[in-house]
Length: 184
Image 1 (cartoon, one colour):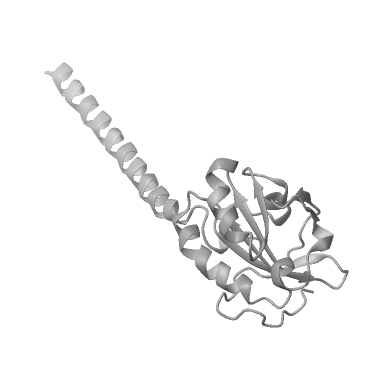
Image 2: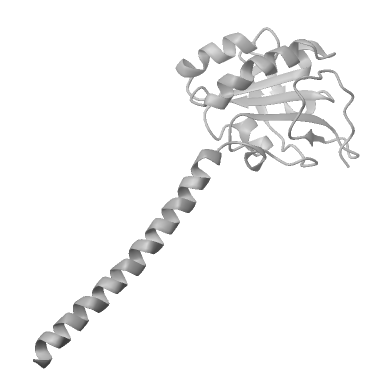
């Protein structure tokens, strides 16, 4: 009789252990599922206000060289990628905003991230109102702004040292041309 009792107890302990592991796995899956819709979206994926823009050099789709030093105060900067639903929703608002900027085409920078084939439609829509850069993920402009998620909408101005810095990481696309305060 002791052998069957020991076997039943062992099976009971193994079942309890399996239940603990299953509950932990389910808990982690729920946490992961809650985070998944936020990946690449919102302020957590954009540089924060006051953060300096790192130096970069690139070429626009028009073949014009572009560097950090050429960004005008109040430049609206947008990062899009064609696979992003929120990018498709935000694109018309950015186009409208860029059309009303006092510095015109030079005061808007749009960075479209992806391969040339899939980014062509975005670049064509943005070209009339903004300087457009097409780059692969982790390209020089994305790295300079520390952007990891899309869409990311920023506004930059020179800080006290003359270096371009993010003045807002959530520009109001409904109020173009609003004066921008300098980042400290």
